[in-house]
Image (cartoon, rainbow, N blue to C red):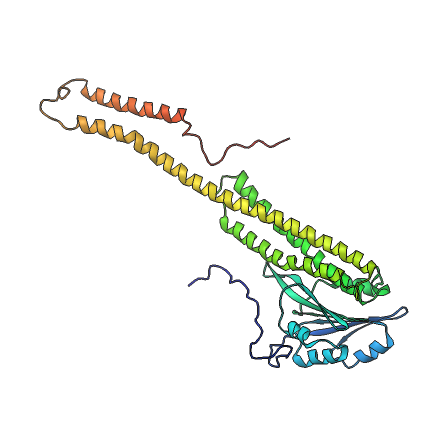
Length: 366
């Protein structure tokens, strides 16, 4: 049987036979890469490594460290990270089993942040989890995929010493990473808005049948984006209350990021309302087209019922019918049929049945 649609992606569930905070040793591991950015006031180092052997040396020589892991590491590497940076086992378990929902949780000296990053999977919107550990002088980010993320702009700012990242500590780097993820949602929401505008143009301005499946696909995409963005509001609000990690200056930047999230939510709500209105309009147009067909059939039946009656009366051919041998009987029958048809046509025209009820000519406002 031909598959009509792509099945929706389901959230991966953690195993039920393991205790809380226990890493699954047989978990599926994808290829991963480890990049290290380390710096202080006078020095900057960037390395691509395959193990964590040199991490301790870099921590001793440089004041700030960012470890970025692209891909799904194995349980051994996660355990080693946990030992080096005092990461909580429950947070490491969330890294191994992505939750796909933004959240912020303090674990001792480290702050655990989860952010869904947007990605394009075969032309459809998907998200991958970005797990972030914010320590006193280090930030660790772990994403699900190896084929890129949305943090290249942050890396370039660090390499070129642009902005405040290399002059500030780990909390500001965490904000910069969170803010970069938020900014990458704006083109996605704008693209969805353009899709809805195109559908609206087809539905409202043309006489072609509306594509309700296209409207439904757009609504599903909007729902997926909103599901990813909405928890970010609560996460940023929680981060603004954590004075142990974010001082007053940091909270100003977090408030700006929260404003961006609220703008995205407002845009999504507006587009969802428009998509719902378009779906209702498409259904109304489909019903109106059905009404047009019914109206035409009704007019045809209304006209031919009296004509059939007249033809039946004058086709009985009884011997004593008055008009049976009359010279003008045939002309009289046809005249009655013509007058009946004309009378009904005039009545339909006066009632506006010949005007289309689906579309009216629209005049553009100047």
